[in-house]
Length: 434
Ligand code: ASP
Image (cartoon, rainbow, N blue to C red; front, side):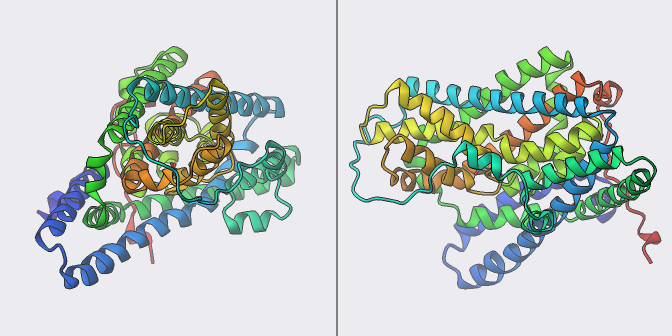
């Protein structure tokens, strides 16, 4: 039995972990609903501790991984104009897909009318943060102190510094080459560390989901069923129509194979509800399974995890319309355009971590004068939806990565077309660890 378990691929093990976690969570809530022993030792004990260690160890990898891989990626680019083109295309595609996502969400919600009939009245006032001004967003891209940016894990600032650092390495000639070799070795070591930590994944995923499904409010889903199903429907539609069409049109490759190869990243995104914590897996998927070159993926994946949140944008579109309908408030076309603009801007500079979509939603509601207590309305079902939309977010990052890589001659089609490429869990030779 143990031998068989060892022989399974990581993907299969994580899948087992997920299913077992969901089943154990649901069983423990129905069999021991109020048992202090279960709550204390299992839910808030073992499951909580192992789950948190797993998430923290994934996050631990993010900053060093982004830093080293972007430097390696940029210093291997032939010239600055290549970098400009790469950056331009990536940004354009990220913003475009986000705008399409939110438009799709608003239109679907206006057609389905999930909130009509709820007839709620606004009573209290929540406080929302203002959406950041575009000028501030631009200024804040540049770190005054790169060490601080690294320490705080400010992804955009780390990207800016690493890109500039990489360009300088390339421009510095012989001393630059020496530094480049160090970073290349560092990058190899980081990838090994990622592979090492991945061995924890099946157990981490199991504990995360077991805890979540013991505590999640399932009743809320029933009362918000229209909102819940519509949101899931639009998320699937966006993946099936927008991504698959763009993918096919720009790469000529099979969108179905693309989605199949996304399984690891999707499972991690789903279990952690954080595109940021999933970066190590998304990066592996993009390079080893989809065949995108490191010079493209090292840049597009971390950038995407911060600024490309199509799933989150879809939630904001559907939620805005839902809340407006539930409180019987009419929004104008101008308001909807404001929603599209605010949601797109708010997604830039907001890191992909669990629940951040609700903070962004508060900004959007504030902007169009909708009552913020609408958020309380959908909060009960948000955690589960967060998991699904995070999976959509990382799928979008990888779709754009492949499209940009194809345009830049950085997509290895032999790897992409090989169904088993990168599938086997990377073996760590523990005998070499002394
Ligand atoms: N959890 C999402 C992500 O990390 C963000 C959100 O929608 O709350 O991409």
